[in-house]
Image (cartoon, rainbow, N blue to C red; front, side):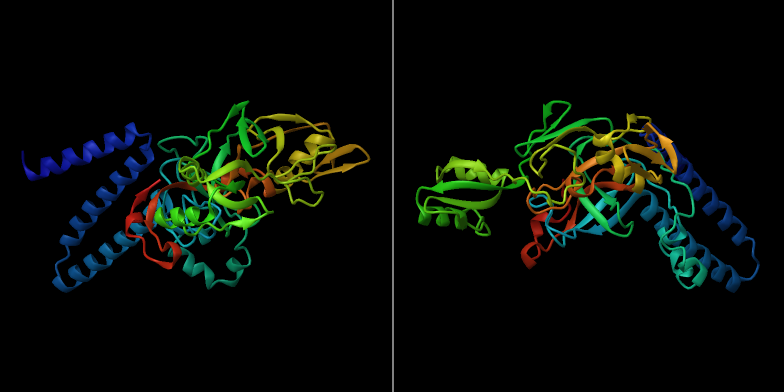
Length: 389
């Protein structure tokens, strides 16, 4: 087999593999790049003057490299930094992560400011800068290799500012019925098994405090802070894994989770009439799904007012028990897109969907592939380089 035939075979196999993965669009882009590369080099070779031929070749290769990097960043993979401790012990502040956009399908840019390198030119245009927060083009997402699943950890734009990036775990999909009871999450009446990295506040008694501290130092849990509640009990923020280790070592007794108490000003995303919801007890309610129709009443208005006004681009209001959408009287509303309910693993150290509501599909950027590198506790973590989630 000749060298040319081998290249053709490899390209053919790559195109077939991408097609089987559901990435036909990526296979087409690959073919276009190869065709443009071959044809351009062929025409450049016809230039008689060596100096101009080399100069044009250099410019072409630079533009090809630039366009390739833009395509990779927009359509395939990107890099982000973890902004907070809301996903401890899975991800830590200042972790640098790789986001896979191929998993759910890349979201195409909705303005030139979302295109790397190209956006630089628009920052120098005053008319364009005045539209920096606008969407210039309609939402469009290409096909991906899979769909979102409960438990996935992904990156998305916040619902209040597209420039603010968040990382949380998906606890409920569009159309799911969600309920949180005593800190446990149920979807469609099934308990979501807590992951080992999930953190919460626990109350417990200690058999021997000195032995406990020795154990914490020995197993690398010296960061655990104990807070005395009374003469008998202590409180600490622990991951499920940490808690299981302490139980197995038989160093703590009478363990119970610390639940939030009801407060009128608790900052939840909604205040349902006659229901005392907290961060640890809320629902049941349905996560909005494209095509789902609701009847407008005090409860549904409370639940979905924020998402309809913010993400559905409709003005909804209530006046003396009568509901208006875009100033027209309405008794029902049909959702235009899918939504997801997101929560941080560090349950008491996060602001998530319990506070700001449902995340629209249009805001999703991609699934976390791995940790590129980590400076956990201000020390470089060699064991976290390319750590897969």
